[in-house]
Image 1 (tube, rainbow, N blue to C red):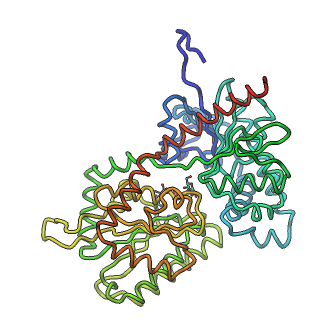
Image 2: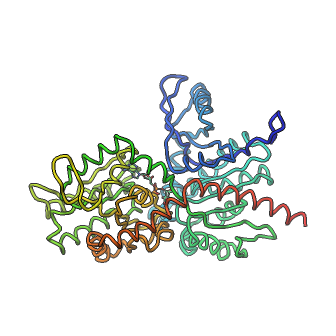
Image 3: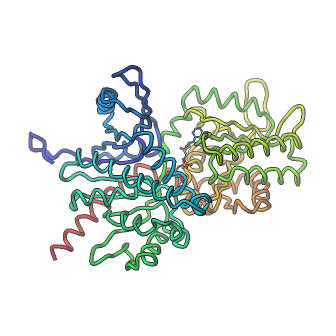
Length: 506
Ligand code: ADQ
């Protein structure tokens, strides 16, 4: 990598993920409008200064015609994005089918779908075939844009086959793969009909990363038990070739949230929320409306808390924001109805003409609205233009995921609490529980009584203890950022490849 003036240019990083970080809307035969999404991965990679990142992925739209594809490719090039075009049938079988119906529930300990288990290995096999085909399509695009010396970083359960496809093209390519979900116990993984083929495909990578040591350990166990390979402290060894396996806990761009709190719109919104819920303690839940997030369990625990603590009934409110996902899937529709039914029942039982205990929104919020919600918290006595009131602290945020790779919502809440000391109730089955540990109140979301008690504990916690816990959480979230995560993974991938080359030469 040398520029014409002889100075070295930055090394290129090809980030391959199922979705590009843009939303594309077609405006005409050959015109598109694009909006960059500001997710954690995007800001993480923007922060990796010594690499020049390019994205490769699906734009989330079906573009059957060549004119449209060319125009979209041109438009995306300005954003350093390169599209992979997937047709509707592939999306149906690969994305809706194998990724979201099979791998997602399995990796979150929800098992394989009933209909596949019972019958048609045919549908299972055709979905797996589509999965491999889609992964090969991603590999073709990577290969087309790859230049010697590039680092290729593959993301998530959608692309487990990709490391193998890439190494088949060029065994010297530096390939890393990172999983954003949990990797389950080997006993769960072994129920998957394509268990061995998937493991071997991932092992083609030079470096394999997970959010926690447990997930990394489960992966190594799956390789030793299912494939009969040797696990070493470094990773997995197969006939003298080592695939390094390690934990790289993701973080957030904490500065973005801290700066967000200073935006006048956010401040106005915070003021509005404080006035709206004056005199009540605010509890907050922010989740995608997914099976794994344990929203019904959270609501049942809140119901139990209200049942057992009548004095709190008009003094606390739970704001539950749930972004709908996969709304076309019957199981998710059932979950939505179940959540609505529980919310209705609790509000009917414990609400009054003046106040209802749960405000539930089925929608996504923009960044500023989210910051304001995380921050609807104040010191014990707050000032508002009309009167002094005992503050409606967002006393706590509650995360009851049944399984969750990391859970960034818990980090975002902590980042927005600088001066306020809100308490975090956190499922012990979220990866974040391993990094925040004692800073949060850890709960088993299946134990409704325990969660109800933890709500009481959070609401009654004295300021000294809140301060101590908050300090612990805040220093973790601000020190272990998304940028640091990405830099560590990529530099480790470079080192791993160099070390492997040295070993081979010896
Ligand atoms: P997710 O399952 O999407 O991510 P999470 O880590 O909590 O879960 O991230 C969700 C993101 O969506 C957060 O940035 C949050 O702000 C945003 N969000 C949630 N609800 C919202 C709402 N109502 N409106 C607007 N934004 C909302 C997957 C894995 C996680 C892992 C991440 C990153 O499932 O376990 O932590 O990837 O690796």
